[in-house]
Image (cartoon, rainbow, N blue to C red; front, side, top):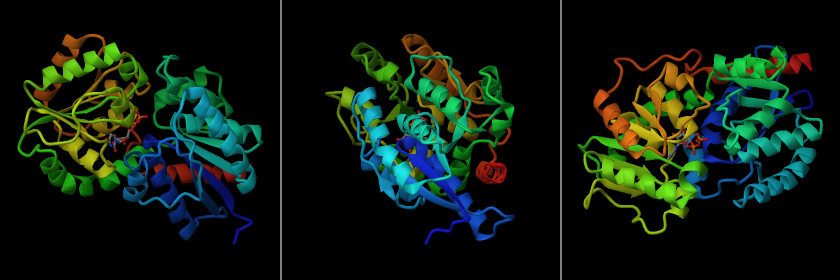
Length: 382
Ligand code: UDP
């Protein structure tokens, strides 16, 4: 039965990087409700848009991160940017109307994030943006446009670091909307790291990696995989790297669709280039924690490698997460410069890790508690 006095939160997830950001927030809301420290109580529901629908990109995360089954599953699937966005808007509107939340909470920068923020704000429902304020300055990235739109319609801007706050100020957003809470992705990482490390041996033996140093690769940004020539160049770089060190490439479905004739799955028996399906969170984190280096174009992986102290080479010329370069283990390399990529990855693997992983302020495993406090403060003010 509905608790009329409770503040009703609607979390909207849709794609792989959303789950690890939202799971600890939902758990922290449950913990708050179990012993509310004040007058505010929450009710929460989870909406899954189905932007990622393959089990390897969705259900595995709900399970491993112990998320509740979504109350609403919108099944929007893939398509062109516009077609997907149109379906998202069309299917989210009646869901927001039916559930009538007080606050729609959206994470990160995927299309579901943007559509949910847009629908909610048009219906007069308040929006909280988790991971607000990140900017790469590169408007050719769909994610950058999504970030800008969401931040400008959101009522509560929950940021991970100081540079995000500064970006929001620069864009004229009111300081009273901004709360620096830290990085909820780190809450998931630190909580599940011991379990992920325990399971790393199984993943390594399944992929034929036992006893070998390896480079872990994730590449799926449109700028790196949509142009066949660029993709070919990226694959050639990986082949070259694999001459010297085992390369493991759990291939995002987006990338796989574009690699027509590369062999799939299997151990490192006939070479040191291992291609496999996208991994679950525990397996991926387990392998990441043991990798000699990581080569990526993922946003989240830049942060996770920094938190783990794993050398990371990012196949992009810009990043919305500059703190991973200034304080962390991340280095940007021009994706069109094959020689520079090979050199950077080899140097990163040879360099090894810092004695202790970089400590980024508020990336301490407790960001979700601060998120819930910020939500309660918002509820008291409204
Ligand atoms: N990840 C995973 N399995 C993989 C590759 C990545 O679980 O095979 C996790 C990774 O640890 C991080 C998240 O997926 O938590 C990042 O998602 P993605 O790279 O798809 O999105 P981005 O961060 O670039 O928006």
